[in-house]
Image (tube, rainbow, N blue to C red; front, side, top):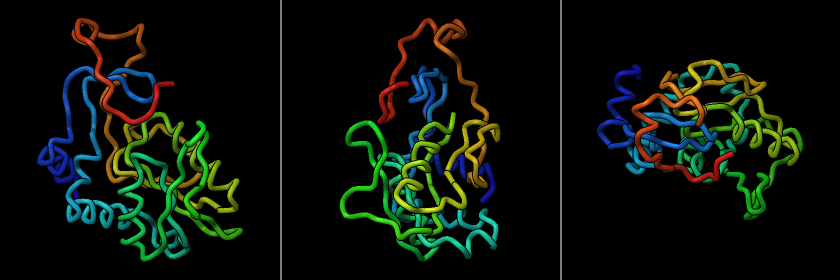
Length: 194
């Protein structure tokens, strides 16, 4: 899929929002990608996962034994990545603030894992998910996401395969442009701000 086709999928599902948003990273933006909306159509979610899988190098793709995604945002795309790659998919969640495998999910020591996110901005959630996967015995050999909001700047410590990298500007609370400062921020995400 080309970048324009991907953004068309987001627009068609009303998942590309414009306004004043407080991101889970604590930064502000005039754009927000509501991946849950783009993924609510199972056929679209499947197409997007297949497109991500095609971006992963053949060598890495052939090694992946499990897919693990962070809850909440990564659950659907993680499941669809498991389907696209023909491997089991599970998720880590934060019942007490730190990611961990629950619900009977487990990894065998040395399982080769693809960690999948919906959106990566600073990489904080991704790095926390990777640490939880490694603590559970898995070896994260790559990461993937629908969207890389860092425009290629994020370093997750493993090869990273986003479907598309976008460069929507983000701002610290004390550096808001006047048009954002004049409006109330909306927090559409699922995570408490850092």
